[in-house]
Length: 500
Image (cartoon, rainbow, N blue to C red; front, side, top):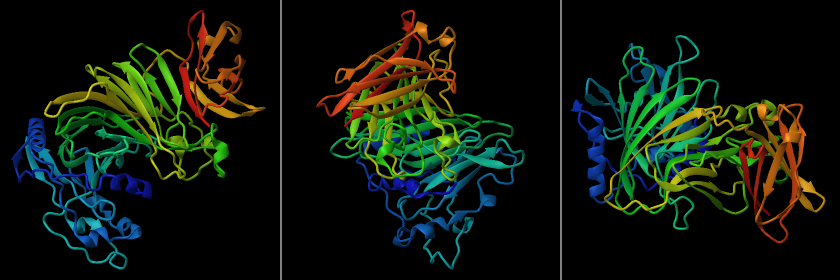
């Protein structure tokens, strides 16, 4: 994977917010309970940030850091019958603190040492760097045989704070997930918990999943995570987390996702760009506890905005990419049409709360300006253990059958002195008898809405809904639209927040 400047921004966001973790010695007995006990012990003590790497590493330029590349034939488990291999990333530049990694086999954990000679480093470009026994890695990458026999290709990366990314077959890296989000968009600033230590269970020959354990620490919380990862057409992760708050967590985000949205056909006029759209994700999808399926197109507002979708026990939520044609972006390098979505499926009772969407103004595509997560209604008290579990699927489309025709695209533009909205719904048996039997329902508490017009779209085979609205003197307007047939839902519910 090529590390981009955008990835550097992800890593740098956690500076000053990482902490020290106990380091097990060679041949230490390992079990998940050990990680939980370590997290509990961390939370019972004052937070202690870990030391940074030597200054020479921090002084590396962007090009110098990129020139330090891990040798693939030095990967963990390379040349063995283990079906996976693990590559590592060097510290330095935007990654000032390191992680420690151990390999687990037969119930015993052995530390993986940092060996500088495991990396290619052109002496003409990279200056001499100090190396000690305490130096570690900044992240790790998982590879296994997938679509090409005999070739192990990458599918998952953990690097920077508690960020991680994965892809399925034919995907290109895009949005990220995080272990936990704390105080996102709060005036006092966001806290970024950090994965400080990893344990990798050695997969047996022929095994199609790999288990990764991680220890988390930050000023407010410590935690133990277990990831059961299965690569494939969709990359599926079974996530278990045990959290121990040091302080009361009033604003915590579970199952957080982070993505980028710059523009599409709703705000195209703001950007002088040859491409018709630039985004890793184009919408937030929610299947709520009331069985309602919501599609909220993403926005790039001029001011920070936060949307909360109150619920109890959602069936799932995720940031998705529904634009799937090269022509949707006309970008031959970024391949935005191949970026995956990520779908979070809670397990157990997460209680009351809300799916929260944070949209941050951005003027460049290097910024991850979209965050989505589940926010519990009640604060989590200090000292209280919290266990959560969820399935996280990296996919081209949400891995659920809701029975509701999806929103394919949203367009907006001027229409006289009003705003015109055009929504395309995918083909469905609901519309087999023609659009005359389908009724659009459109509403807004902040704007005057015209009666919607339904037309059949010959390109998609579905229906197109068009309407105009006038927000008057309001600076924003919440808009809602859906299709119904015989009084029952016949599409996803389209929600949008327009801002002046």
